[in-house]
Length: 171
Image 1 (cartoon, rainbow, N blue to C red):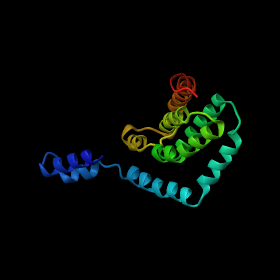
Image 2: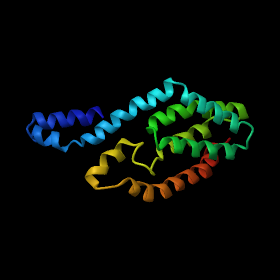
Image 3: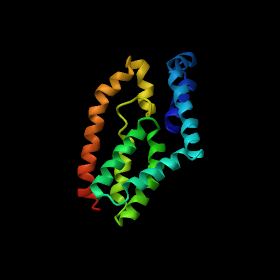
Image 4: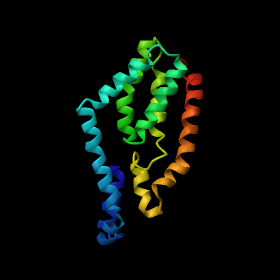
């Protein structure tokens, strides 16, 4: 991110790009949306709403079969990842994955890898990923375009994760 910003500044300073053109190229609606998502996820974390959700999920899944736990953890993480940033989702769900693995007496690696894949697989909405937000206006996309194409892709990634992760990182 720093390299891209420095490159953009260098292009303006080297007069390769005019400042007015650089300013017009920025999709300010996307910048405001991304900036607005940060305090919302921080508020959810600080108010304890996210901690309460984590505790509820932990109580629900303790004692289930490892594959079922992984599948539900991946599904829940993916759903959360569609409304929060993938980084924030992974940071919130990783402690749950470790606690669930400990409660089941299993290795935490498959659960952490599942969280990593699921938090990154937010294809069904443009909200969770700054990259998706940035391409909406220039690409002429609508919210439904992401759902129509992204939901099947997201489900495919989640199913593949639940099948492959236990084979590579055993419980």
